[in-house]
Length: 279
Image 1 (cartoon, rainbow, N blue to C red):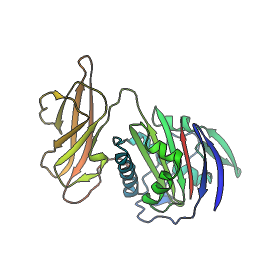
Image 2: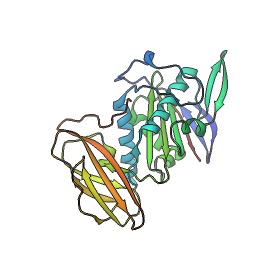
Image 3: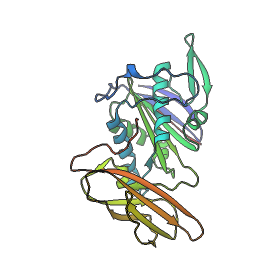
Image 4: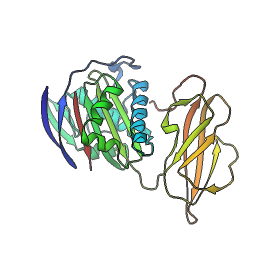
């Protein structure tokens, strides 16, 4: 096993390069992926939606074990993570910063935060990995590394994930947008077989009201971060919307989940080496 020393913003750590095999279940041919140049901002198609969702679920399972609220998966951070996973493989490098390969030489294009900000305004941390076969394998590697574990168990509210073959390459991007208070259904699971769900709503508010889809609002009630809720008894994609107030200001938030007897995808997005970074 080779060990490499690397410096990440906020901590110094060792990472190891461990062998792994390419995962199956790819839902899109890598040959359909664009070849990227520059500093982000371009869309990378999904390679394996199941693996991506499993990685988010594993993050929230670990957070639950530590008494932390679930992170909300957002498309902008997914796009940032997918881009970086693909770009590292295509230009044959492994780094948080972004490079282009020009005449076989790597040329620095931009740093981590500049790249993520082309997708999402307030990035806070990033984990990357290479060579792990499955979401559980890579999560085990990250959770056994203090820096990566700290990113997963941080106070950030939002997450995006990327997966790319061959490699595989894995990326987690984390962030918190000022003024955004995510609502998360069932720890951001993709689907539920029961209309009875649990909601987590970020923030410290006085009152809250909720509704399903475009239906009638509930009465205003005392705010709680954790609320049991019942979806409409309709098969398919369900939306829960919340409005929160502290007496002087009011914000809204929403989330979706697929209600079915069989697990189905929730999100409508199109869409071994470790390294972690925080700021």
